[in-house]
Structure formats: C-alpha cells, structure tokens
Length: 293
Image (cartoon, rainbow, N blue to C red; front, top):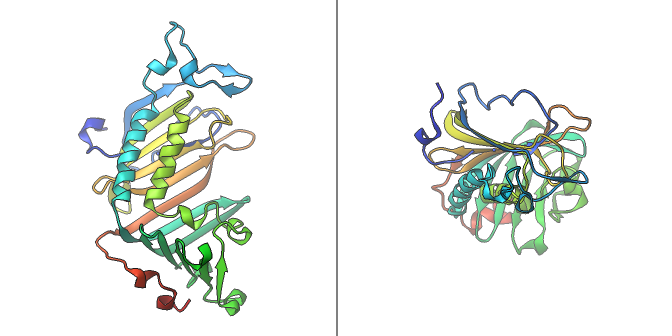
C-alpha cells in the first residue's frame, strides 16, 4: 500500500520532453509507490502553437490561472532543499556515472570524482573500460581557464597532458555540458532554474515516488512531464532523485521529445554514488603534480 506523502520525511524527487502517452511512465524501482499528489494544469491558452504564460490566461470561470497553485511549485521547493544541502558541502568525493546522447551517439563514462566548491575544482579519474585511466583536472582561474586531460593508453596518450578549454569543440563532441557545470550543486541549480521557467506555463504533470531506492539507499523521486512538445519545454520528462537522509541530489534524468511522437528519449542521465562528505580536500588534491599531469 502506498504511504501518503506526509509519512515521508520532507525531501524531494524529477521532469523531461515527450509526446502524449496514455500510460504513465514506470516507477523508478519496483518498490516505488506513486504518491497520489499528481497535479495537472492542461488548459493554458494557445497562441499560434505557443503557450501563453498562465499569468495572462483566464479559466472558464473568469479567474486568472495564476491564482491556481502550479504543480511545479512544491517540486521547486523540494529541489531547493536539495540544492541547499549540496551547496553546504565544501568538498566531497563520489563515483560519477554519466550517460548522454551527444550528436545522436550514446556516450557513457564512469569515474571517481573529487570536488571542491572554493575555488571551484574538479578531478576525475575514469574507470570504465573504454576510458580507463584517463585523468581530467580543472581548477577555476588556473591554467588559463583550461582543464588538463591525460589519456592512459592509446595513441592519444603519446601526447601526454593536453590543455583544453571546457567549451572546446573536442570536448563538446563528447559531452553535452562543460566541466564547469559539474557537481551536485550545479545539478540541482539547473533543475530549479528549469522548473521555475516552466512554472510560467500549464500542460505539466508532477508525480512523487516516495519509496524508491538507489544502490540500496532510500530516495524520493520527483518527476515532471509535459504531454505535448512545445518550444517552452526543452525536456519532455525530468526525474530528480534525492537521498532521504542527506537530502542530496543523487541522480538526474532528462528525457527529450521523440521526433515523430512516441515515448521520450533518455538524453541525460547523471548518477552520484558512494558520496563521501567527511573529507577535507586541499590544494594538493587538485595540483597537477599529484597526478603527474
């Protein structure tokens, strides 16, 4: 039996872009209990195929649509709790898994991560078979704003350490986001910005999965979705996974609208596991000499 939302500790859960589907998406885990808090606003006025902000629309009774509580309002409040939990961390280590569709091609990586908030610093050592041993180091305002990359094997390893701008063509052909967007705080910050912008319009469903799990840890998943492709919605469906105990964001899934209709396509999937927050990372942890870069 599903437990009511109030029975769950005050923590959050996810959204994306897709064509209309008669069946709801499957819950993120077998144990996931769909909380009956699904809210929907699907009567926003249309102007030339675009949505009119609900603040300027009126319902059948002549009442402003803005007077209604948008389903994303509660989701945004939960996401902000998660964002604050992430921003409170000065540093941490984690295992980071990335799955993306980049220029039509699937890309997948697994890496051990070291992260420091001030100055913004990221170190990655890849562990998946294809990129095993690759190292990436980026420290804000150092190395002329470039990240240092060193391959462990193959022809590319002959070049040794290579300095690349985070937004260089060599990077963007294999990643949808630059390394400057890495980290837990950036993950939730992006979701808050997205949902805040989408809350200006209708055609939105929000669902809560209060008994989901990720790697054996209890999480809450918030899912937002849009039934019809609109230029106002970049994604058809978004799922934000939040650890119940720490309130930290541990996974984000973004689904794009499928061309021609049908189920949305998973375009971005970022997962953080084995998060260690009781660490004190120093300059040495982000110095090239520490990794022979």
